[in-house]
View 1 (tube, each protein chain N blue to C red):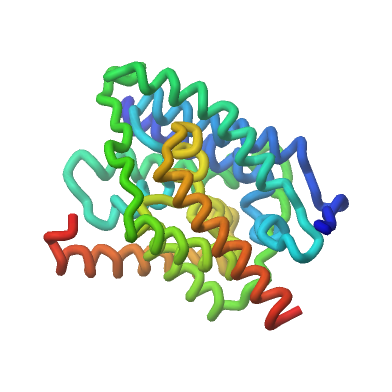
View 2: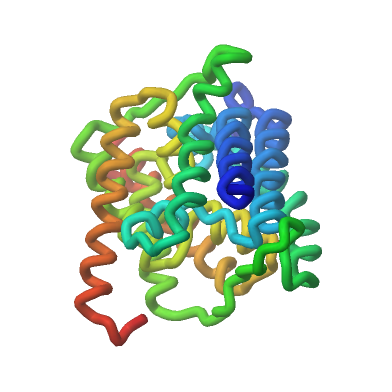
Length: 142
Length: 145
């Protein structure tokens, strides 16, 4: 219960952060990705602000085996750069550039009642389901 | 060479929103001991394991519920979606498949990974930023616009 409540809080603050920063608006994200047009550097400031806080948090997290609520720290073990990472990320970036939505802003815009965001989220979940289907048919790769 | 869009550039609200996102990631790692990677949290709901559904759903309810919390205090900021439905569907599929294959998105690799100084996440971030820039260039300048 404690665990889910904390997760709810993180999700809520994350969503509010996306709204404050303007990143829930795809047009603003595309303004950043459009360096050849009129460039809006805002997204870089969002990343900067987030990493400024994150760097301290993860420095603390790295030294602990249990979280402050007493749960196991689940930091990613893998540091391998492989084809899956590169190809997947390249594909994600292309999709991101098409509509200006990455997963977080898509979900927040859905919460704001945007029909197109609902279509985006539905397609994104379908994409994730396709991934799971392909993965489960190739059990040796995981 | 680069023209800055001074009219739409919002450094302070961007920084403030970024700090909030950082605080969300900080609370998630320090309280829950997990990486606040949105594609991973959502994707995990598709292959439910016992004890693993509640917190994922709770995070999603918080995230999706943020606009509802916001409108109790202020008017929602504008959300402009220029892409048409066919483009939205293709984009969604690519984001869904791509983030799962690449094990993360802007939050997991971009915010959390870079904060952890993870080389793997740096590579991922450079990859998705790279194709993001290229795709927008192709759509807005090479073919369209």
